[in-house]
Length: 257
Image (cartoon, rainbow, N blue to C red; front, top):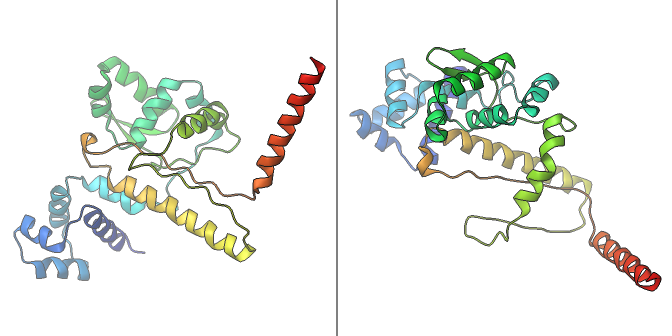
């Protein structure tokens, strides 16, 4: 896919996610709707026009470029073992890195969490030494990774935090209007499993795309969400067997007492 086409597809996704139409773009840019349709269909955006549309969407050209690169081969989605170790031994730097991944700029992080210039510099320098960001003037930095990180299955971050994350995430009744919990069981063929696995992968990609599209949305107008997807061979008998074993152990303990 050409870079121009990738940029325009990202623009279309952004418009769609915000419920905007070509007509809305035409009004904002003070041109006809037909002109907007022609620009999109013929891919004849000038840099100035592209910048105007980005401004209308309250996003930067850099944000748009990141969206276009989402999922491309040059995006770094897995860190080196040394990088993970560096983050694992410094929870504050890991937290700061996570905030950058959510789309916050260093300036917004400093304002939101009350960091002074020295604290800000310390965080940025440590991330720069790990080669996770490029240092920029005026206490700023640019991510050198994708916003979506695939933490190593046996890496230090998962070893430290996976159990805590799972327990904290599941500590909910999932009964509010914006929460979802489903647990289904059934017997599936290999072909059905293959289809479902691909659907789960697509769902994860959709989640990442929407998160990227909402990067430029003000923090006050969005909320952090987590999505956990699991799929593995399992039968209800495993629970029954485990329960029976526990009851047997309890009975033996009672007799021993």
